[in-house]
Every structure is written in C-alpha cells, then in structure tokens.
Amino acid sequence: MDLQLTQQHILITGGSKGIGLACAQGFLREGARVSLVSRSQANLDLAKQQLIREYPGAQGRIGLFAADLQVAGQAGQALVQAERLHGDVDVLVNCAGAARRTSPDELNAQAWHDAMNAKFFTYVHMIDLVIKKMGQRGRGAIVNVVGAGGKVASPIHLPGGAANAALMLISSGLAAAYGSRGVRINAVNPGATVTDRLQSGLQALARLEQITVEEALSRATRNVPLGRLAQPEEIANAVLFLASPCASYVTGAILSMDGAATPMVV
Image (cartoon, rainbow, N blue to C red; front, side, top):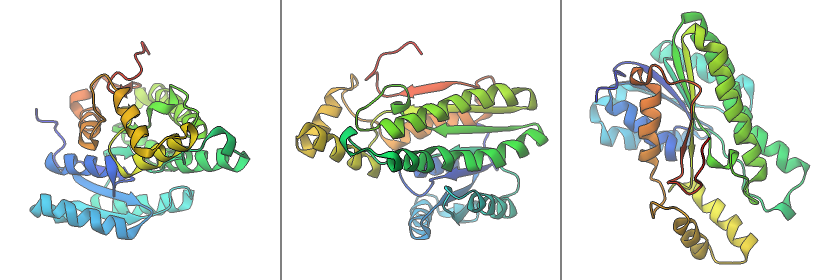
C-alpha cells in the first residue's frame, strides 16, 4: 500500500531509540523527510548512522535536534530548527519521555510530578506549538504513542499510567476541537514492547514481586495471548498508517496494541 507520505515532513519526538526510531525507519522507507528530537545528541548521532546504513540515499532527509522537551522553550527551539530545515510539519509523532516504574511503597509527591513532566508535558509542549500551526494551515496529523498503562492500572506504573490517561484524554479532545480545521489526532497504546525501556519495568516488577528479572519477563510474555511481546516496528506500522492520508477518516481513535493481554471493549 502506498501511504502517500513521500516528501512529507515528519517530526518525531523521542526519535533516537525504540519505537520512535522504528517510526523514523518506516517514514524514510515511505520517502518522507524526518526530524528527530531527543535529549541526547549522542543518541541522535547513533540513530542517524543506523538510518543511513539502512537507507544510504536518505542522508538529506534526516534532521537531528537535541532538546529537553520537559522545557517548553527547548521544544519551541527544536520546532523552529526543524521547520528551517524541512519546512512546515505535516505529521507529528510523539514518543518522547517515559515515566519511571515505581512500586507503591516507593512513591512520593515528587514521583508524581516527575511522571507528568517526563511523559505528559514532553508531549504537550510540542503538541501545543504544532497543532496551532496545523490548524492555521488547515491540515496535519498527530499520532501520540502513549501506553497501555493509561487504561489498566499497574501497581508499578501508577504515576506513568496517570500521565498516559491524561494523554489519551487530550488526544481525543483535541481531535474533536481541531477536526473542523483539518487536523487529525490519534493515539496508540502499546503493551510490553522489546525496547530499552522494557528492562526498567521488568526490574520494578521483579522488586515488587520478589522474583528475578528473568521470571518477570517470562510472566509478561505468558500474559500475552499472542505468545510474545511486540517489536518496535510493529507499533511503528500502526503509527505510519494513522499518520497517512490512507487514514483520512480516522481521528480521535485510541488504538490498543497489547496482543489482547487485556481484552476490553473500549
């Protein structure tokens, strides 16, 4: 299927690793231009090296921008630089930020604040800037990669789950608010996915249950009816579709991708 993404400008926050990097790979494969935002310039450089190895002719279609998106001003600077390189943003994909997994006994007020800053505001700071420009132009798409913890409470992911739930609400709410202006907003909720972030979650679960990390991984896998954890590129495939004109009538959707680990109607 031609996703009609050739030469579109895709801004990906958290684009240097994991699902964000898998999204960058997919968009480059479709002929798009990508701007990757991450806190670490070193991680961005490594990501670009990998992307160029996979797509040797794509060097001119890749932009790197180091920014801490917990700081609104840095989000604005990254956006200005990305638009200077590639023009208006056609698609925003948010993958940046992850709340630390914490058992209930380890929680305190700062942990709740940290989770909102790490996950909710890293998304909001970029969304607020980009969606207004998209609305003025009358077109655009935003895909927020959120997480299954926003629908199903986990004892080791309560602050992060609260941030995820808030992101789902604003995804559907902004979709309604900006639909008449030609902007689509959707969210994807991955379950356990084989990325660097998986390890911290397994470690927190192991501490809570007093088991080994290996046993925590085995339990997580057994809980998935498909019999395995998701790969980043599988999540990216859904993101690409939702970002593309092929999904032109899909907005306000919250797509669960947990391998049916938690059967639910909504």
